[in-house]
Length: 292
Length: 85
Image 1 (spheres, helix red, strand yellow):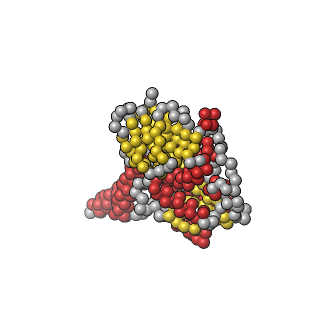
Image 2: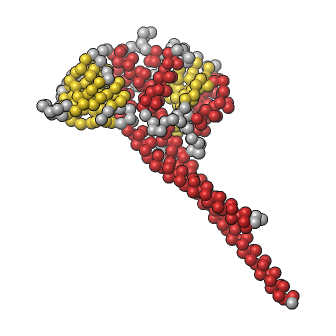
Image 3: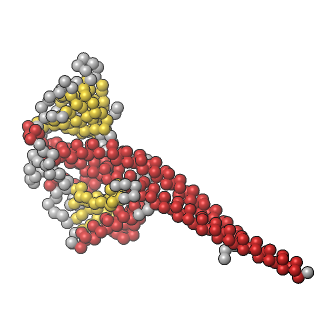
């Protein structure tokens, strides 16, 4: 049985851990609210861009001369998997889930005889992927310097990826991130970002038939496509940020509760030990007095 | 007799209001949009967006960068990558 002193130290240490996890939970909750607001604020732009893309794409026929971002390179041999993870750990299974989804996809593609390369954003995904797929990592992208996620950050990433695409480094790009559903549920999601999957024209109403374009449809579309890639990435990063905080909040809540249970258990053990020690002492004294 | 005008960036909805006229810096020249403008779509160059709340009032200027403008039966929507104001 542990000594009284050891128990006391142990209780103290669990108590301070609980304080930390509790604080982290509060911080994550506050950050989650902000991240959620940012994700909601980004929605109108994405929605409008999507409807414009749909109406434009229904007017432009895909031919050899159309932009590569829309038409593809004509092959699908080399796949690039963009994995968006977080910069910090202690967020439950958040990063693990994203990486697992990405690796599953990679395995599928590899089994189908394709070449798979990784493009990692965020420190936590990099560590895992480096262990398993060190040779396949095309590039990793640090997010550590970003305090508040801005569109320009996503744009820089999108530009880099698009440039690699233009240089013929890969044929198809997938993006993996965690879609935010609630603080409890974050769903790892994969989607194809290059070539651009054009939403099919439900948004196309009769009224838009007479739209005038300046310069012309193709030029506008060529201008929009890289922007669309950037906005997809931006959206994923926003969702990811919200998911990360949600996941951390849940994980830290569990940890705090766990620490509470542990403190209770240890306190009971401590009290029992103390009482046992007192009882033994009393018996010794009484026995000593009787002997006289 | 008001034009519904929206200015949206990836980060937020900057403006959504009823105005008299908006002058947009299109890639092929500036164009003014009033209520009942024909459906139209144009890319936008970096420049000032001038918003006229009333017919004779002073315009409010917002600097925008990169994007495009769409006019449809609902009004004018400007999607910009960056906007100040």
